[in-house]
Image (cartoon, rainbow, N blue to C red; front, side, top):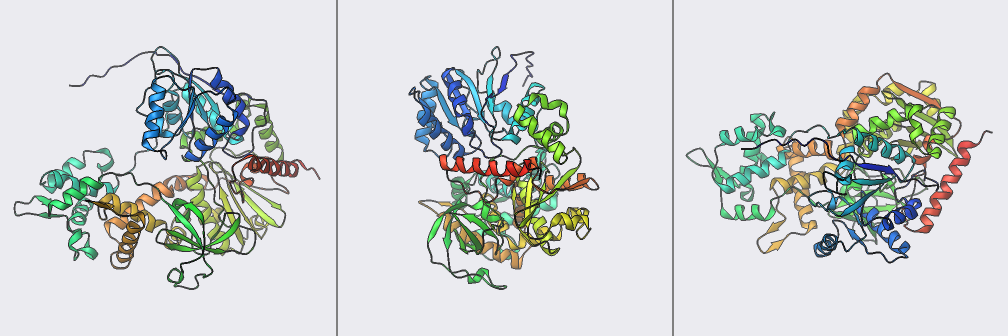
Length: 622
């Protein structure tokens, strides 16, 4: 028997945006400019939780605070890459009120109610109103005391995002994304788990599963294919005994074929797969022709590591900036990203270490509305509102329901900047697809960069002239059909599906990482899943796990639904502004082009120099 308890009232949160006379950066995520204000807030409060969005941001901010800690305040660091014992020591110190500040990622978002936290500081935009509400709730977690929080935007676009999140919190707005369909690999794990518990009837289990909202619309035929997958591995794998984990008995129930499968299930159960990094290995052998992947050679020096999610979207021949040089992507061999030296200075797809979380649809809508409504600029710092006024005078402001496309020359390159405000995932996918179309149109694109707010593509031909002369109509360039053949062709060339398949194979139980008395290395798992993927692609392309892989990639890595909604919304509402120089709104995204992260004072100085140069160009009236 459960009762609903409704509590009226409660103290309203007190949230502010950090006020500073220092210059708010055009771009970047470090918020170094705000360090004195952050440190001063720590000194004025008891215990302060400082949230950031990524582990690298946490490490950088903690280091900077430690160097500025002239008062020797006890300050700690807490994120998922730290050893568990170190995290527990930090938590114990917090419980004992022995710390003045803790720099943390989402590891302290949930499950821990620190009653004696006086203040929450959020460095960087929260990316969602609900996430902000959760994080500021760590402060004064009591009904009769207000949660106190300070938002610290890292750049000018984030100033607007922080203001939108603050406004949303005061009206109680939530931005929970729409519930998606349940993952098929998770369902396969559940089917095996039920069989490990006790024999089950398929009819009974389907009836139970379909009561869960994510699986409410699950077709019975798909459910039966999942059961068959757990029982045989599928048509192409059914001759291998190790994939036959359950079988149907004479009484119609399904049960585990051998006790070892139940043991392996208990060792491997779970749906969280740690995102690995790949060694970047330089080779002199370049892939050529249709069999380029088979021609990749080992050998050569290792230049460092790069996150696998970045490599997943590359196709052979793509270039990117890493370790101070432009590299040509040749392919992936096991757990290594094979590259060769590239000629020239343009990286087609610059590596960009941005925020961990995508910008929510709700906050994106609010930022668009704020941009288009000068009456709301009064809540923004003068330097930000002045920036928007100059944009209005020099170009136009993006309007809700439309897409602003700016084109302008700079040096020997032509640039196109669009402002979809749909988040980095959707923009990266859009950039991949648009560059394919621009290549076919002979625009000679060289590369692109995506942020949460904008997308920039640059090339050798004057794209503004092409649009105006109707050589390449914008309505065709941004047509929804790009999510058809162009998307399929890109996926076929990239390694994204193969790497996503590995996660699906682990979650579904097709491949186990842990065995009694031993554990497979990441390399061994990758080799196993790559071989299985190649077999299924060739002999059973409609395999249920291939279907699950495509669905996971479409939601988790590509944000296809959000991109499709945007393309539909802007149809017939694309505004083109051909300029003779960079616009104010384009400065932040232009600063990201070719940027190599070198933490420290030199990196910050370099960003300032780039910003000064772009600002001079923007303000030049000649």
